[in-house]
Length: 84
Image 1 (cartoon, one colour):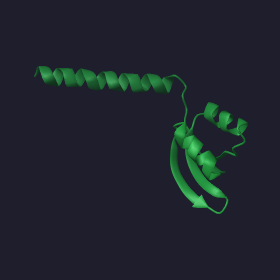
Image 2 (tube, rainbow, N blue to C red):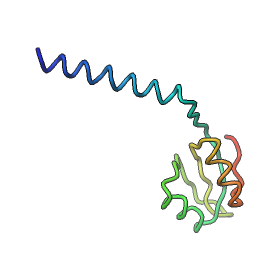
Image 3 (spheres, rainbow, N blue to C red):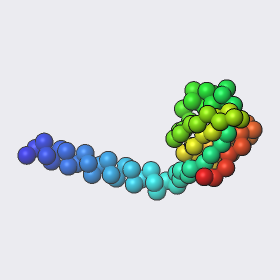
Image 4 (cartoon, rainbow, N blue to C red):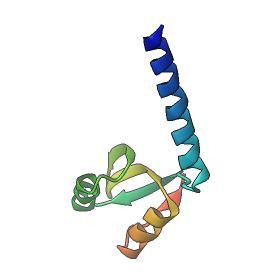
């Protein structure tokens, strides 16, 4: 019985924390970009959230999950990011 109570409290705490993150105004959106193989490797090394990658004639077509700040940073680096 005590284990169930602890598990229940842990679940409630996890839900409360996830709701707080959403309320903090962090919004993620889907974007696409075509980049060179080198830029692709760099984004992977930086931990960018890449949902998909496809080799195309002009490089690598990426499907990305980004915040607005991440989009701005990529555009400043010369990466052409567009909405999906």
